[in-house]
Image 1 (spheres, helix red, strand yellow):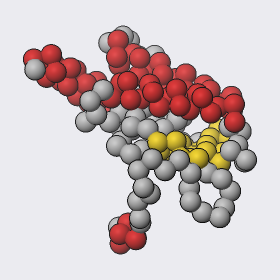
Image 2 (image 1 turned 120 degrees about the horizontal axis):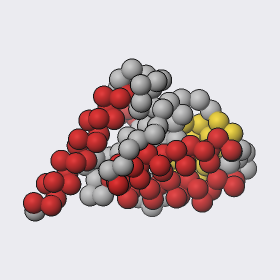
Image 3 (image 1 turned 30 degrees about the vertical axis):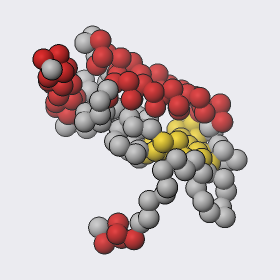
Length: 157
């Protein structure tokens, strides 16, 4: 945590890492957390996805956002828009993947988020009985409950 104090935030709206290294595009979005971002090293075809596009974790939405479902879907569209430039994706959790797996992960994450939005059944191995981590089904249920509570609260207001 001591090193955290040494970090300097980039100015709002910055779209490139300001350094002498390879050109790195900042893909800012609000899907997982306020100010969350991915980094695209286009000349290398590397997408560093942060806490998204995991093969072992389902999407964790920013439940404090005004519209967490739409924020997540919008971020997935951003990833989709650069997918032709990506050779490898590096998620913050799970395994590194190639371009075809990137597209598959976008599709899986979209299906999960749309199921949350629509209240439909989940056919996602990351949250079912064979989940790769034993705490994921409970985390999924909490997320579903919190979204339902958020919707009830907004309906009353």
